[in-house]
Image 1: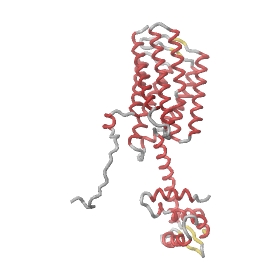
Image 2: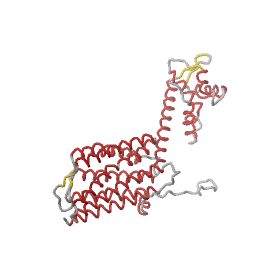
Image 3: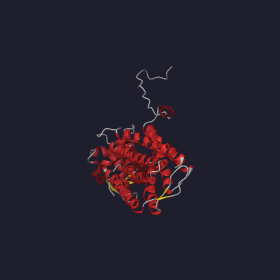
Image 4: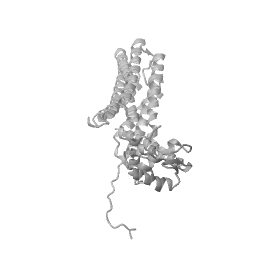
Length: 254
Length: 119
């Protein structure tokens, strides 16, 4: 039991709270009849799975803090299983924006779901080892095969897809708000995936808490991307101005 | 290779919406140059070949007039016999520009569709 564990646990619950909020708002954002409905819902599912993962991760750390190792391990399994599945809805979201073909998006999503399920089966087959805990985290060591599968089966393809959205940032013809949404989502997703990867690879100590803080920042940026605060609207001039048509005399104004 | 009349019409409509009623936004001009460029600078194109694509959108008279007042007048093609035309180097440049305008439209259309799909 270390005092730093509770702080880390709170950060994880914070990540989960922001993710759930974003998820609920994304799912309820559009009407069923809207053709962007599924894209919005899948993005919501991604954040929901991520939120579930971090909620269980926080609970896992908190359980270790209360010396309930059995419960902590169960929460850790639930957390990691949820994390392994989050690429499936994300792939639908990105592929649908890029290609607009439902069949391709569903096939990609299924591919990621299969890889995720394989990793989950492997997780429950090989289990995890309790490594030496430090001040900030009761560390679990994942099987190297599971780490490889996560990196090359989920992380690298997901990041490649995320980078597929990059050309949007440079588009001249896209509305400013769309560019803002995509840019911030890109940063948010990159932060989330990169620092989750560090966690999976087993960094520990203060670096792990800092990485969790960056994940929290990623979740907050993800929220701000689709539901921008007033300050962001003002700073990035996201409000589109409507100009009235001038119907008077056509002259040079003198 | 053939010419897709429906597609050329869609592209022409796109440029016409920018106020470009001639050239890029003119379906007749696009189709004539496309057909002439298919045969290149070494093979003559029959007027009937051009009409095969233009009959659905314009009458014979309009196409003949367009050939004379724009295509031949600007030196984009030469009349080398009765109902026989051959594209010039300048005409190939114009046809290449038409192709590029189609690619530009395709990319703009794709981008706008992507933008619309962002929730």
